[in-house]
Length: 160
Image 1 (cartoon, rainbow, N blue to C red):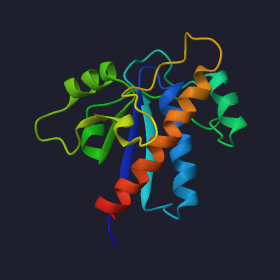
Image 2 (image 1 turned 120 degrees about the vertical axis):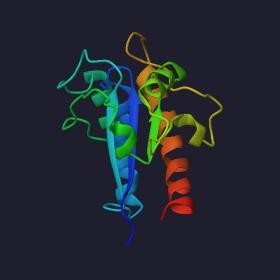
Image 3 (image 1 turned 90 degrees about the vertical axis):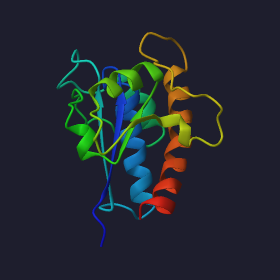
Image 4 (image 1 turned 180 degrees about the vertical axis):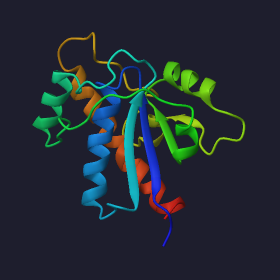
């Protein structure tokens, strides 16, 4: 039996995009029968929201699609995360640069853009819906669902 594959999602404040990715990915893992073989967490590069629940709009959008984010609490990334996780997946290039600055040369993981695993969408970054109006949170879910499916395929093919 292999050690679990550990996945970390990272955005700015850990209240919109990365907790959404955590909830979607966990549900997809459960549906794929990979519970216990893959672990998932999320965090932010900033400290502003540590200990807080996800944004109510993210929780509402998630619930409309069957994802429950209510138990999640924001935390800030730590340098040791780069040695604890196999995948460190950032929502955008700004956060990727921030995480890379915390990464030692001999770290286990290197930050990469989460949407590199998407197959149905061409975007490279998950847009931050925090200051937007309208369907920003729905768009985030569309992108995250796509990339989660691709990530599960990658983990099955390369890690399990």
